Length: 306
DNA sequence: CGGCTTTGACCAGCGC
DNA sequence: GCGCTGGTCAAAGCCG
Image (cartoon, rainbow, N blue to C red; front, top):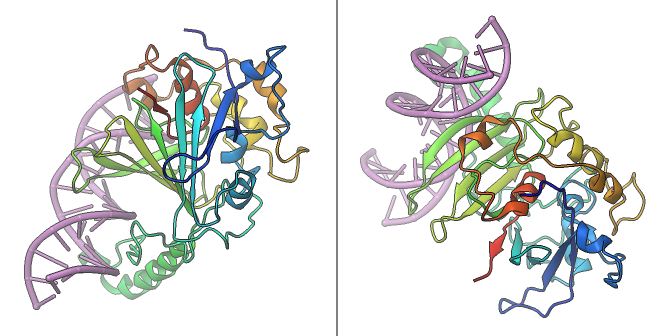
């Protein structure tokens, strides 16, 4: 397959779908760059930009006529043999009070940032009361409480991705720290933590029990650091332009990706040397370019239409 | 040897 | 109070 990189842009030329959510069309950069396409880029933004800080969800929602509470962006993708859809799932019951956090990607905090998936389930960050803890127990409990409180405030957002690959490369380095069987699902949920020091971002990756081909990725927290510059493969290089951009401030128009050219210049490898990717079947024949996209945009749903 | 994954155990929140 | 479930820890093992 061609490893050409394609950036994706969102637009809203379609009618609302049956859920009342306006879909976004997402065209790849090759489409955009094709002469004579009559493609007006002005209302477009890149997927990457959406996800990595150039746009908060409020803006996204407003831009696409979503009600602030819809918490959902329903998208479709063109530019390949098969159209696909992307979906962004909001967390919490309302997004109309999303804090404008410049560095957040789709800053998508729920009302209490606790979300509804595990609302009220403020898990401990550490295990304060293990038998061997002895006298340090109370201290550790305090720490655990503090961390738990911090966790409550972490913004979270989830994406659904049509992918054969569970753990999608997104430019950051993740360390798996847990795996749990999920009720009502034969697929386990995997827990990852950003390996960068002092970065508390976590993500959960699980497969939809309804459609096992869909990977649900939930991000929690915000990276407080740029993308690692020495990560495996060249993913970071290609991400760097948009993802390192301390959005929405730095690089010009908010709605149109200033990093388009940069993206076009970068060739995306078929797969990074990432162990995780290597461990999974690279189903590039099925969704060749989406594999690329999924590397860029780890948490979009790419639902192939029948 | 460092970084990572695997995996069983532990803990807390929630519903009954 | 008890059981279930989700989230996390940490030891052991693997791998480059």
